[in-house]
Image (cartoon, rainbow, N blue to C red):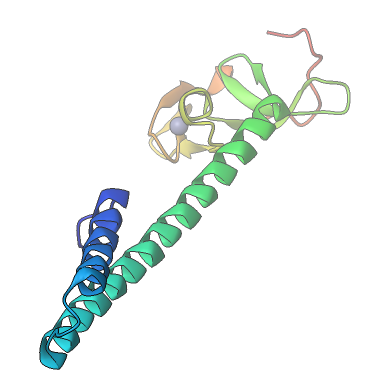
Length: 152
Ligand SMILES: [Zn+2]
């Protein structure tokens, strides 16, 4: 992968093009046709490089926009979960925890919702499918009925 393009690189190429244009303008009227063509070719090259670099920056900005909107989405859903014992849960109609337990570590650190899976070799352990954090089954129950808001 190429080095990430920087604004400095783009400005450098634009400066080259501008300097060539200035040199042509300020040069003697008797500038050789061949010399003029060579200078124009250099200028076109510098402008073409700058154009490609601007496209790269545009793609980079689009990528950043995408990351920003993902973060905004995570931030917006921040209040959509409630802690109950050791895990986080969706909020029920009365403000209490309900449904499948979600990994508290992943939620608190990365604002990502990951369900806990049963540990095949140990019925008393539930494990996060993403970070592998282990929870005691008793402290991360599946809540078929909404727990009241004040519980745990
Ligand atoms: Zn996790």
